[in-house]
Image (cartoon, rainbow, N blue to C red):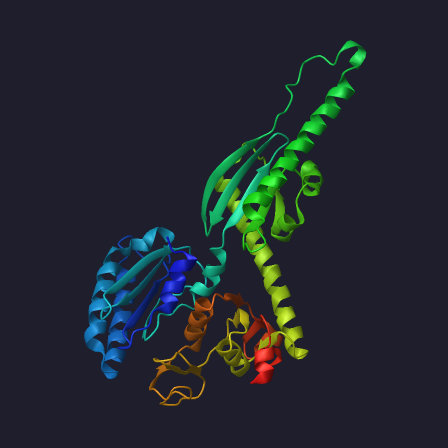
Length: 389
């Protein structure tokens, strides 16, 4: 299973020999049961990659990685509907292989460069944040944790619900009293659930997302007992049978809710960056400004549009990224190497500085800004050190 930490490790990796090989395989409906078409397609990709490597004078180390990928292609056979991702470097004796959820961001491709091609993983990185899904009934709560599409039931919380009796007493005298007692016990249970969610998932520094599943008629009561810190992380609630639902049913509801929540968050974030940049505050738009913000450690969240394309160079010594095609680094004077897709270098830099990377769908205002932006933690020139400098 791939994790956010694994993606950061891949972002840290750099091959001085330029033989970092990235392979993504997206299964399609096979034309025959033998899946021979898959192997033929991968073989064609490998041949073309080897030709490019030969022209660049680095076919020796690359060939070993490509041969292993060709062997793997013979065994894929649809890969059980999962996307296959391979990150390999023969000179560093590195081979990392993962099965990923099928997404549009993973077209079948094979690339060779000094860094791994991590742009398709940008959207996946966000989905790997831990999500708490809590199913709440009047006297029971089930707590699940999700990372990506993996879900585990972590604990059950049982309330002290008084046993219901058949009789309501003489002339129904006890009926109202019993009902009030049941309501009080349910309220006490909801309060304990809210406290437990605060304890486990409501930390101020946490990135956890919380979802609540319950019957529709009790949601307004449950909501009253959620701490403000829990509400800040609440991505929404959905209607479900809290007791009888299976983990797979819970996962399907959660994935649908998370998709809606993230799309809404992305729209809000993009509008915030656009407004902040126009006001010359904590927003950056355009490649030149974003590069500067990342060099100065200002960037908190990197936004990359689907249409972003740019070439540049990166210094193998100090890591400086430049949009000009220069042979020597403007910072330390050491030799640079070309970057075919600057998004990989930017994503790597963002992950190393613990900034989030958000993939933004097509947006006309963002396209006019170059399909790249950043929300900033601060403005360096407005800090005390920046003003002194």
